[in-house]
Length: 447
Image (tube, rainbow, N blue to C red; front, side, top):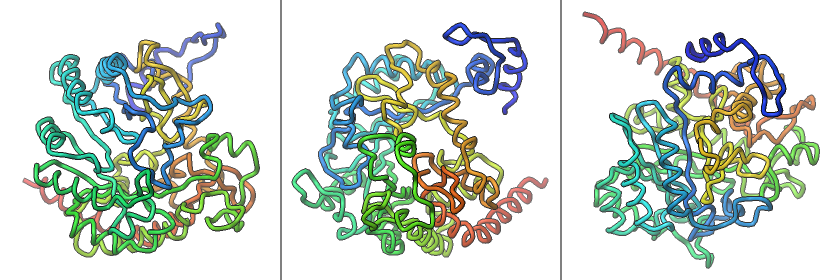
């Protein structure tokens, strides 16, 4: 616990009243809210200005179904009023020196360029002195044109471009509403990003189809796309993801054990969709990708899975929430102003509030949301707690904890066996890189 949190907790050791009037002692779940006025407050909001609406129809998308989710946000576009309320509350709530707006979907560009012009104007209106504002736009790239790119360049947007590899790999699952390939349209959008000199990174979804082709994908992204900042996300979707959250799924029926055939894609009774990456293939993908990266691209190409591991072994916080001990400070706001614990938990049981409640920061720091974040570490099975890679993984993302251990403990991450393979393979080299970085830092610090 940080010093401000510890001080706030100690100062408020008296009791607090719960909403129902119950008096109880202060605990760690109260600390972030109590410390909010004692130091900078930082959190992140992923905004969904068109909800799940998209102009393409990726087979593996985890978000398209939100339009039909019972009790979910439905499908619509964020109103101007909701947009202003969000920007005002977000910029007031983050009291640290920097606030980052991440615009996602669906396809966020469908909200139209005027929406983002207005967003920039509102950010200027509500910015505090010396407050830095960043904007990230995650897009499939098919709607980019010169007008959009001129705007993105002028206002220094960072663009995340979704692309899964060369044409034959990308077009396997990333198709339009008519089932037609999208690769050529993405490449046209990429050409415009380069023409205008817009900063971009790539997001590649690793699935059952492309997981055995890591070198082909890496070479394509590096040599043909020119990506110097690569993000790789494993596709893991339990079969009932369109109806209920993973926790509800785990309560509805017993999860298979890691050793059961139902724990892998392709089995008729598999717990995951057919396009989900096989855990062993995820390990293979990371190992081969790492070998290619470490040969010649350390310090030149940023790969999210590797850079965070280096940071963690340097004693710094994880750069990815999935590998942090706890989470909960990255929430999602839907088009209608409803707030959810995480964009992977946009289900009725994880709706934590609404912008109409009047205080976004208070919602993020509320006790229930803090408990959601702590549950990432608190709900780990003993199998994970005894693992030598615990501080590298921390159970990965809670949304992927859909298996039981060999002894029957619930809460095992679906990707566990692949991650173990990767860590055993990469950590000796990671530790050598870390030792070199420390030596260089020590040498540079000498008078």
